[in-house]
Amino acid sequence: MQTQGRVAVITGGASGIGRGMANAFAGVGMKLMLADLDDNMVAAAAAELTAAGAEVATARCDVSKLEDVEALAQATLDRFGAVHVLCNNAGIGLPTPTHNIKLEDWRWMIDVDLWGPIYGVKTFLPIMQAQGGPGHINATSSMAGLVASPMMAAYNVAKHGVVALMATLERDLRVRKSEIHASVLCPGPINTNISRHSVDYRPSKAKPKADGEAEGRTGSAIQSMLERGMDPNEVGSLVLDAIQRDSFWVLTHPNMMKVVTRQYDPMLEDGTLTRA
Figure 1 (tube, rainbow, N blue to C red):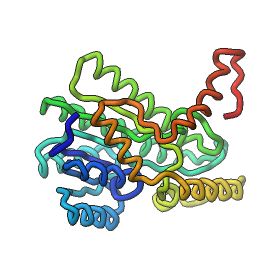
Figure 2 (spheres, rainbow, N blue to C red):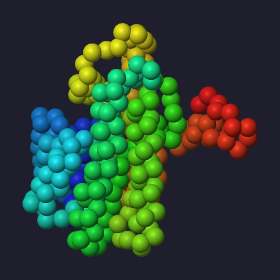
Figure 3 (cartoon, helix red, strand yellow):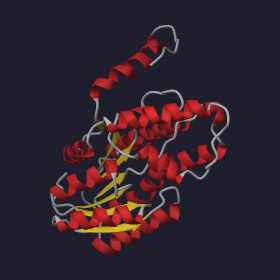
């Protein structure tokens, strides 16, 4: 897909992977609609990108709400007149033992991490189809969409769902010989503030009493791993390459696929689920 002059919508576009995508897309002449819940951060990102020569608009969007996603689409059309690329990137996650996850937190994580991409596809795909020509929809899953690590049940469930959503969409579009393509990003450790932002936006502020220390240790370990992770700008370049080449899988750490293999190989043997 050609990218010069095309319009890209990025949710969670103010920081982290979303900002990395914005930098990469701006570098090839794309027009940007950055959506985020942090008004100050998205304004700062837009100002920096605009100063560098990009054409940028912003919108406040809670991807867990269909009406916000629909408003985002309309705002994009009002400003740019078209949408060619959608990156369903906004996401959150918190480590909690499965038996301790509050139902409120289950709903929150699945609403953002899975319903957000569902709403994005439901809202933006008809617009792309009606305007004709090539288009691309990407969604950010995770390596947690391919393997199930402990303490992350709600996140794992949602991210597995994102992989299934995008894989099905890709097949549906291919069968119809559509000019619109789909891809899924499955990042490993990336240097972002997702864990800190998740705490800030968590609707259930109270921590469960049991295993609270384990949660804290796991959360600290995850944040430490992320801080040593890949630069988000590198991830943005990988997503851009997938859009330009119409590739489906976007893997930041291909070497981690051996973990996936270790989890699923037993399916061909005795059915025992081994440790990842």
